[in-house]
Amino acid sequence: MPVPPDSYPSRLSTSTLNIHQWSWVASHESTVVCLTFITVPRTDINWHYTFGFSLRYYCRLSTMASSSPDASVPNPPLKDWERADKLNVEVVGYGQDDKRVIVRLHLPMDRNYERIDLATTLMVLDVKHSKDWKCGWCDQPARETQIFTLSWHHLTPPRATLYLYFVCSTDTAHVRWALAREHDYFNMVQGWRYGPFPEARPHEPGEVYPLAASCAFCNLDETAGRPEGLQRCSRCKMTRYCGEKCQKRDWRRHKVACGMVHSVAFENWE
Image 1 (cartoon, rainbow, N blue to C red):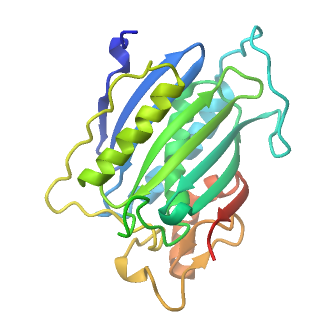
Image 2 (cartoon, rainbow, N blue to C red):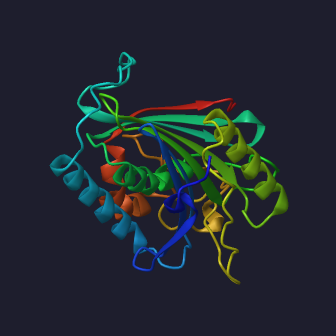
């Protein structure tokens, strides 16, 4: 089947957020698969506040506008953690040696997959800085997170699942090969409807991305691997900080995602 023109990879560069994002979206029978590459340089910590504002704005926007559910599609029964009045999101993150994190969240009710993709992307930061993650395909510390999103926004209630892959760098051949293989798997499951694996933008000289093992606010490499460890948010029990000062400074951004977390489970960690 030919890929529609609007399904080809596209680049969105938002200078105010200091983000480079490449998204590829394909839709079939109300099921949306979105492959998103998001990398955030650590050149300016003010982007934390922009992220928080964007997520709060999404929460207000999603309550004002949402499409009607598809009455012709049967709805599966609610799982024990899902809510009928929310957008139920499950995030599954993969690192080295089959280490995983499963995060379940309740977002405001919404059926617009573009807003769903935006909101879940904004939450990746909180999941990324949750453990001393290493690349899923080598022993190097993880600095980037690659996302595959499955969205069932037509169901009642709407649902979305994010598959996160903690990687060292998308500039490396073994990571690109592995991500292409994961893309091919999703493509096969969905009947080869999603086209070729999109090309990522090469890193610019001097671009540095925060270690997943570092503090979620200051992002300093020296905060990773400290003997005394990092402090985890006592409310969501996920995001980590180097101290109370950084946690307080990040609260304006983090509190939105923090309040939506239903549960966090780390698997295969000693």
